[in-house]
Image (cartoon, rainbow, N blue to C red; front, side, top):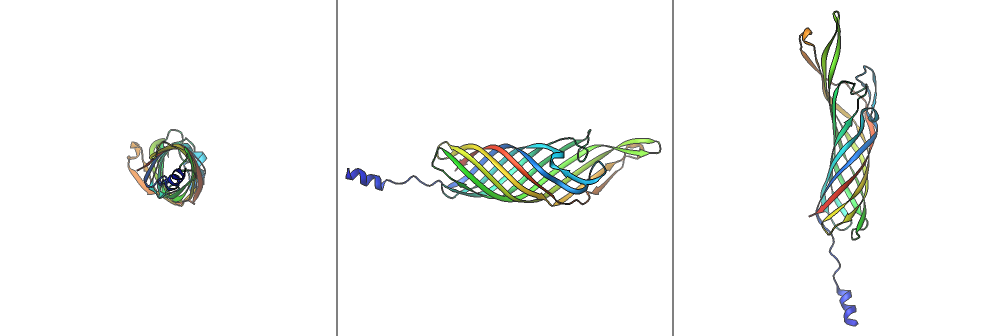
Length: 238
């Protein structure tokens, strides 16, 4: 009995999890807030453009890369690409226009894992970063002339960027051995588009010479917004 007690006391504890860690995720995002405020819209008015006006959400591909310091703590960076599901609207994508938008999110983050040795490990992550939104809009442009209305072409290349002030993630994962885990996550963000750049190109119809004129996009006010992202992710510890 004494020998068994001594052996139990001297048995080594299970090793702390550490090493390079990579996570890959897919999901869906929805948002509320503004793309911009007080800007010239495609309906010819100066006003606001909301996320709810322009999109039906987005399809998400995401990745985390960093170092698992120990069982509980991960420090690294996140990146996300979203294919925005653009919808027709009079402000930014009128009927008959071809519109495409994608978003990129990048930044540092930390994660804390509550039950790393259990079969299911709940965790929470906190980060911040930068957001880039790229849009291309093309379609017909009606040009009135003394002989009647002719049809030219309008092309807009817009790029917005700004800070993501906070990115809070909660999730959980089932551990399949020491090196792989899989589970759901929910990510909430608050960010603001603060810088707008890009061009507007107007091409006249052949009857008016077919020439093209390019100008810079006009100024707009900041667009604050938030996102909710729900998905699943697999994590590899190397």
